[in-house]
Length: 516
Image 1 (cartoon, rainbow, N blue to C red):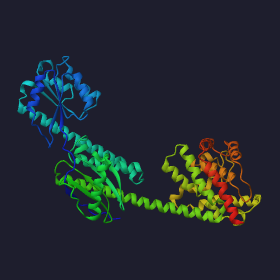
Image 2: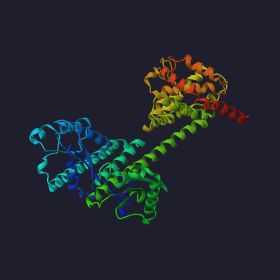
Image 3: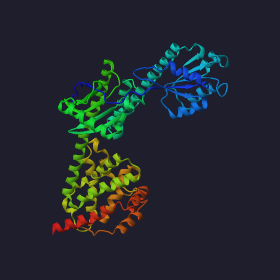
Image 4: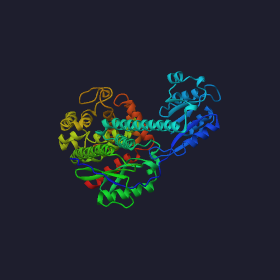
């Protein structure tokens, strides 16, 4: 598949005004706080104003810090309730809270109590000012510089977090689990938020982002931030983006700042990225966002390729299973039930859902080797002779041979070859202890026998469920893996196998009626 170059469309902001930067003033002199407010009343940086929080002691400051996790700058006095209260507060912020983003400026009226050089050397602060030197202009400059530093650090942190998501997910993209895809798109979106020069908390209301995919007319959200938690608002955005991308019509509701980037695979739109920055983005940032969009397109292409391959694999399994069913009608429905039994026991043993589904599919091929066994033996109504049983045993090696050329069939190949091996090593075809084989193989060994017992066959009547369970119990530790049997019994005790057992008897009666 060839990816084409994405183009962006711009237009109007729907979001709220940008929230103000937060400045914490920690000082036991009320007049100092009042003067600070007056000096900074018209403060603006990056189109955002300033909210000043006030604390009259280090103790009060701790409560304020607990209530506001997005404070950009703290102006901290040293001498308050104790001679070193401010310095203890600095240690609390850096060490106890682990907050290394907030810019801390010591502002003291008693520099002799804590000399500048000592404080700079021993405490993680960003500036040290004598109150007497902080004129209105110098205060403005100091706060602006600190907020710019905080903003830059947050951008770096967001980019790092986004990159971390992308890098963590990238190795799994080719396995394409739901988790890895979600993390990948989340990381891309986090990167975009960082590129738009917005703090993590300012996503709410000042930048709304979404990465979505379009499958025909269906749009599925992959990652979102901002107020897209509001489903009503998302429906509006989704409708507008669909109109723009699928029909080429630009919605009147879009403003100049809204950016919509189509995700293109094989000249066809398969999704979009939608963002609402609070300022005009430089061309360098736009170009980088386009690169990230290209990565989203590549990820979507990979998942489509993976889906095609998986569907082909599933179809191959279905085809082989149907051939085995056609060869021996009595085992056709048995194959489907083994799939369900296997998945249930695998889940009980802690196997992940994706892996359990794969194991269920592989288990359906356990008797595929019966394709090579004569019909007269498979359908013989009476008991097999010793020579005939030796012939039947060949279905394990035939199954292995049929599945032997495909790496995709690796686990199914082992099941086909070894599901008649025993825990004590007295099974066939190799006579080795079944503990040497996979857990899947040991599961199929149990469920295959159980289903055969409760199902009527041409050579026997069906057993009662209790008799079949007792047979499994009596052969635990000799024929069957005890751990697998325990899991099987636990699932049965919950009633999860009742429908399968009933279907085994019903299907057999139906087949018998048809033959008559």
